[in-house]
Image (spheres, one colour):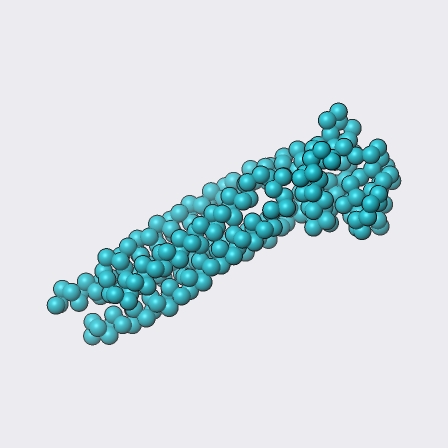
Length: 250
């Protein structure tokens, strides 16, 4: 009876590890997507988003390693490895809960960080900062926006002594629906929404919407992964208990 119960739990644990491996792969892919998406905006945010992407990739890789203990423990019916697997899962689960709470508590600070970074980048726009120019042009094209909150951010910046370096009365060409050279000339005073992106569509809103959409996806994956981890902890503990009982009987 004990042997039959052990086989059942063993097969369930193998199935769990397959799901766990796929979850780890999902985190690695998510990290790669975040890294790729925000690579164009490195000059805005530095390594902030790269750090988050690397964290996802590292966690995904750790999950692969933890899965190794689970597979080996189940295959070899090794009590020590199976319990190590259960303990590591529990630690990762606690860290995920803590990270989720911290991320939720810091969401307001994250919005301010993005806003401050974009306003700083507006003032640095010019040929002397090609990285900033590229990032702004990419952002305004990707999010179909102009400025941080709206196109007037460019006007205010050009009026500063050390503000954006634009021709008088001009906006960046990437504010145009069709980005052609010189299309933004004269648009600071005569903004035309048929030629330019919507007047009230700022890039801050675009960044926020993109981040929120991806947070929901990552959050959903995280909740699913947490549920899978709980199941894995229970299965590992059951298998370890069955192994111990078999040894005691022997």
